[in-house]
Length: 575
Ligand code: ADP
Ligand code: MG
Image (cartoon, rainbow, N blue to C red; front, side, top):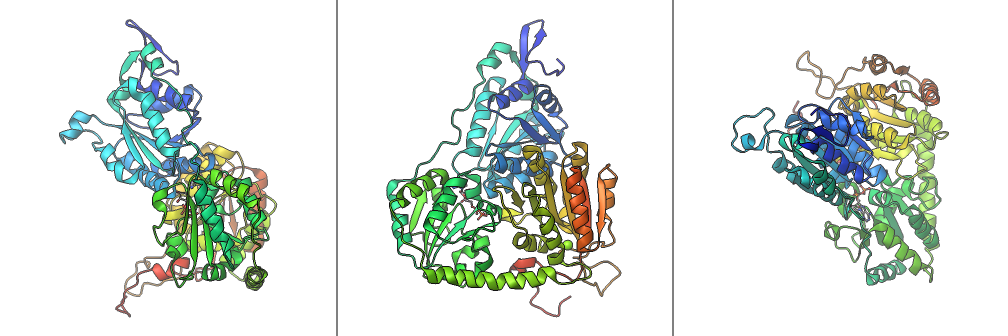
């Protein structure tokens, strides 16, 4: 049999179908319309059949970027993003992205071909031999293998349910070559197909948990709401906004929750972050974990006396870092609906002193920020370059923003406001580098909107070859490389040999010429004006573009905002 897209193939034994076709049929039956991946043995025909049957296949240059794209698609759509990989090395390349999806609670399914099990299990040295199913387990929410064509409907349904129900995450689905090529009568295949009903069921929180939380909130003098990317993922935008506005409680958005309410909302405490973390007496976490990004909820960052409410779909998350007095276990949409219904019966006003303290600190910090943004820095630093980008993006509020790097991430998170929910994708819970082009491609493919990727030069390097993918599919992605010639900074000198210092990259790099090689448009920008012009031109063009933004190699700090985590030699001077 050759793989046309046809559902079945005539054969001397009657109408037959095979593992390739049934896999695509089962995905289609469950509404999958896009797949990201890299083809090769044994899954090349899977992509062909998918394309023939109307699933869009986006082919990448390396599996990690394809996996990051699938993960971002999962976050953006609420349906599992699908990544297709070849056996062993391709599978492992994709596994980084699958683990990252699990860590970030993004629904994703990595579907990988695998070699012959009888040879793998006896370690007889097959082509691309690896026990992939077991290798995947520790990094996933669930892992499954389908061995028989008639089981694929169940396999896909289980993978989808595992990915999207409860706390979303990464799922691995192993498809051995023998399964893919196995044939069964067409009617056996058809009987195996079904659509999973309600794969992400609502999880209604207990009524008493809502009452307990509101009772605690009513005792607050200095209440604070923290919105995490779980709140963005929940697509409960109106319910969340309504709760925040009707209670008047100040809120702090985590980076990927920015835009859930517009960043210029008068209740945003983002510009008074230190103040509110340090002084809040009752904190309501909505889809945000008390992990390193919130300094584990511990002093001195937080008040030792603060009391916590946590709204989360995963009951095991509660108490993970500090005792939670009022856990609300359930999905955020259901929880916020319940909160809103209860709040209509009346809620204590937020004390004026607290609002005033936040407003004062916000005004102070805004003045400092304004001075940094408008300084006349030559060459550009992170702030002046980002001011130019901010001014252009103010007229493109539908654009998606992808952001990774160290200083590039820290500064952009604070300087670039978001006005729409789920429009910002960044390094996330792991602080991972290499998500840039994959996330950007998924944002463009899934939304059809323009995407701006603000990338540190080091971060960009991890997925830079995907510029070819962006150009091949003609996606409206503008990549801005913050070229400061280094990891963190570009000005370290090695005084011991002729080799560059460990943190140094070539600052003479012309990243703009990389995209020109693939037919995209490159721009060089040495000043904020040039950067602004280039970005405006690229966005109005709507075609693949890259701006090489030259940043002072001395700007920024080692490890960015995470300098305190940077373990340095205690034997100074060591070098
Ligand atoms: P951030 O990094 O923005 O703080 P995290 O990834 O740390 O966000 O936290 C997201 C939290 O949201 C996770 O604990 C996850 O279990 C939870 N979550 C994800 N989706 C939902 C949902 N639909 N309803 C409730 N909680 C959710
Ligand atoms: Mg750099």
